[in-house]
Image (cartoon, rainbow, N blue to C red; front, side, top):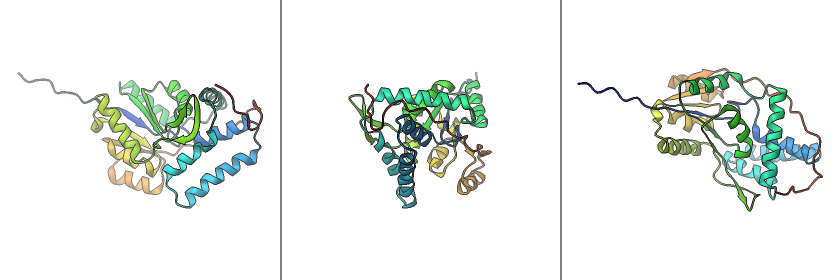
Length: 246
């Protein structure tokens, strides 16, 4: 008697910024937060330029990602969670922030019974509203350091490059997922370790180097997302320099 062939259970791993979203969650929320805290517009521009200068100087993306969290020092975890939910609802209400083509691909994986995992250099407070909306199974993200309910301004290992692949591999092992039967989506060369980890890679837009790799590997390619819509800023909710309590 011939035994039935076993079926391998795959999952879908999605980068977020530039893949599922048309804009960068970290910077759109940072600008939104500074406006809510009544900080002058030039303060956000200065912070953005500081981080961009690090990139231009050749500082690794992991270190730039860590440096991003400096402005969160002493902010309460509950405050950031509340403000991020408010920010995300505004993005949805104004439209154009989610990339419909990639979201439709995510829903196809769910319809096929595959778990969906977000793997992002962004952080949990910003990704939680998106994860709830899309009903994903897990979020693997950069973890800012939080002590006694407040951000310290530091972060643990950024979820960038090889860290994405390592986290996805560990999650797959813990949940009985066959990586060869899985699919990964990304838009940046730093997503290559994740794309190469799974049996199927999908490049969303992507840089020339990444598109070249996709052609060599026979990966599927999706069109790039449209430009992100203008960010609608909130009315100030707190005085400059205030540190909302838990």
